[in-house]
Image 1 (cartoon, chains in turn yellow, orange):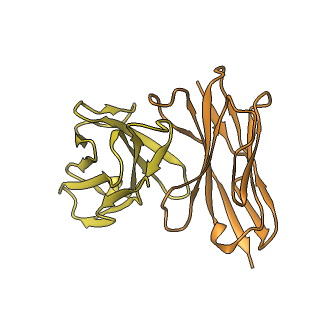
Image 2: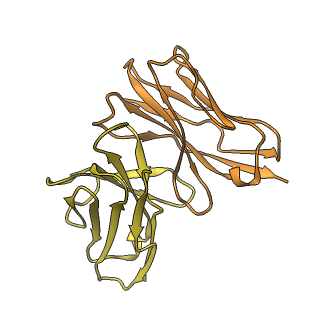
Amino acid sequence: GAVVSQHPSWVICKSGTSVKIECRSLDFQATTMFWYRQFPKQSLMLMATSNEGSKATYEQGVEKDKFLINHASLTLSTLTVTSAHPEDSSFYICSARRSGGQKETQYFGPGTRLLVL
Amino acid sequence: AQTVTQSQPEMSVQEAETVTLSCTYDTSESNYYLFWYKQPPSRQMILVIRQEAYKQQNATENRFSVNFQKAAKSFSLKISDSQLGDTAMYFCAFILAPGSQGNLIFGKGTKLSVKP
């Protein structure tokens, strides 16, 4: 168990449009989900922590109005990149932490490649 | 603040050989968890192995084992009988206990290439 899905797996959009990425825990409940951004050949950079039913906590330097996060249920969190620009092009990864059991372990989705033209 | 250091940006190993990836970390706390994650070319992050700091016994998962040296703050990963499918980026990560709060701290990664 502990499968996390992301949709879409890749997206190309025009500058100025908004893009929504979904992250789902398929076989467990996740009270906390995380959104990361990864640049080529680099490590993961935490963008925000999303708790079910409450506002997300953003890392320093991440624009909350730019990257809208919603965690409406125990199995779904969404990241919306608003008014996307070419510099937002990146690989976005979500992860989920179980609500029970090994709470310290995060399980990752397969990632979403975003290209903004 | 906690930090994780992976001093080997790239490594290579021949198929069927053994390789060890290094990881050191810095913390003033005594209870924490350590992880190795693998990111193959597909970019899916896969949990390889997990270690609880209060356990002296080194974690093992099939061909993967760790050498956890708490006093030295070292957490190396040994891959035995390397396979082509082990080619990936490997990230060492740390989180303070109890782990239900707080964030994973990642190292910069080691790119491992397994050669036929």
